[in-house]
Length: 81
Image 1 (cartoon, rainbow, N blue to C red):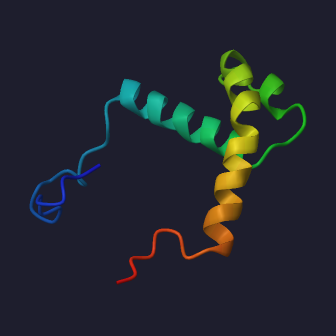
Image 2 (cartoon, rainbow, N blue to C red):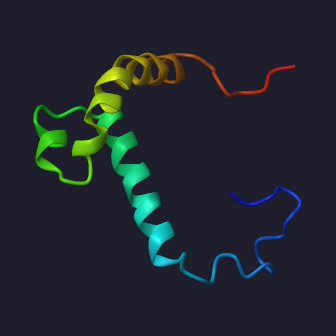
């Protein structure tokens, strides 16, 4: 995340890769969110990175489905005056 007051073009934040540990954490977070949003039977159990998060993923699939349905059929996130 970049601070809204930060000018990303001059901050050099985009020119450097995150450290390898940060990359692993970001990849895991992306995989967990993807698994919650797009459930495929058995995919979590087959992926060694996700196996330890299987219960969390199962517990939050319904909430993610509700969220995706909400943002897809409403004007959620749209600022209306």
